[in-house]
Length: 193
Image 1 (cartoon, rainbow, N blue to C red):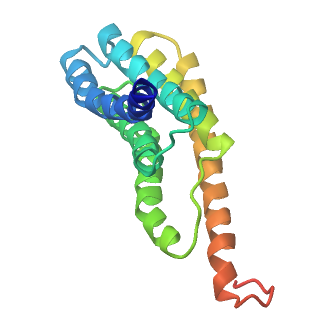
Image 2: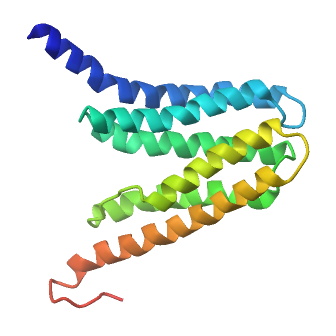
């Protein structure tokens, strides 16, 4: 019984440990990409890719083992956004991405700033499938941008990810507006426009 309890305690920590590891990978990634020439770096791409994979693994394990935590629900998407945002900023600085790519960190700053306000008004934050797909396309494209010296095809994947990220933002805004308008309507069934 004690061994089973210990195993469950260890299991409950693994998803959050992976999220924390992803956060710690960000400075390592940044150091590698800043040391390279023109934003081309296999080592940086590998660190970025492995950190990105932990996003899928931590969520899968938390759901499978039924050990989702309040920390994980906040830290996991934050770690994803920070990793992607740092990559976008540094790859723009290196000239590997156009400056319009900074719409990604701008979107994320907006979401991070507005989420606490919406939560206080009753919004239930849940990652939508479009946002998850956008995140994976951004991970893929950014990793490719770091290793493909010529060719614009990784950028097409990036622009698709950016477009989906903006669609996802629109979906979050509409969901928040609907959920936060309900209490203001006083239960009368009217929309608070």
